[in-house]
Length: 104
Image (tube, rainbow, N blue to C red; front, top):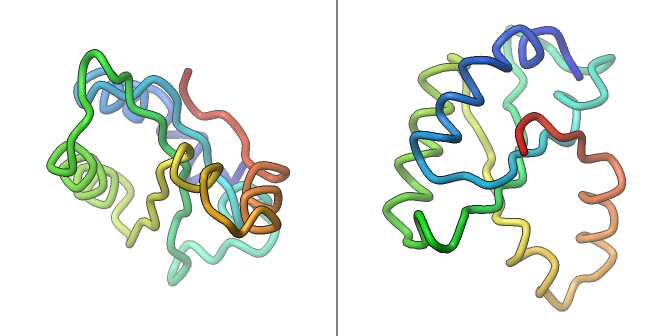
């Protein structure tokens, strides 16, 4: 995990609790760290919301905006359940194989 993400784990955990996130995982260059460019890379996350606490589209977009504000960069946010249910199982396997837990 790139230091830009790792150094903010406490703040990320606070956001997760605030927005009803059960699990947050980073993937892509932000997870690999080596090809992440702090000046121009976005951050890619998989999210799983706690269905009892939050389960609506507004929570998804509010959480995405909060992540972008915290990290100071664009965020690609994917819901893990939607990826796993997609017909593109190779994409789901690729995301899951490199995903690293940040919270939950």
